[in-house]
Image (cartoon, rainbow, N blue to C red; front, side, top):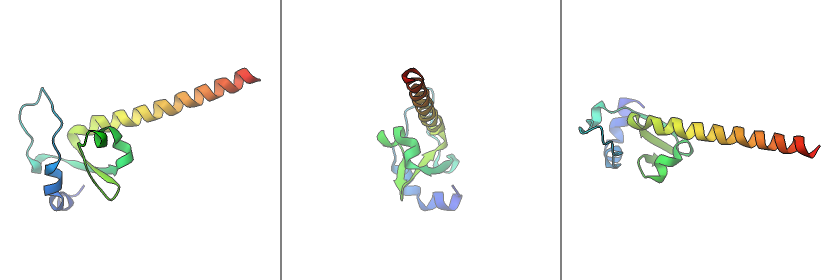
Amino acid sequence: MSDTDKETLRDKLESVPPKYHKDRKEKKEFQDETYFEVDFERVTELVGRRQVYIQGGKAYVPMRDQVDLVLDQFKEKLAHALEVIVNGSAFFFII
């Protein structure tokens, strides 16, 4: 996300409550935070916890929450792989 876009959405991005980090006591300044734009379907956990700003089908995710994005993608790929295995095994046993 460009600095210009970030500044345009500043009020909205700052209105999203930060995720609680017990090991991090200081609040990162807005200008020091990096945001990236993803389809909101890719960060359903963050959307469900209302920790991202959504506009036009895009979620604006702070870098500090990147781990949640990676975990969501991993869960999705794991679920798909398990489904393929189960369906393949079921087909194998039917024959």
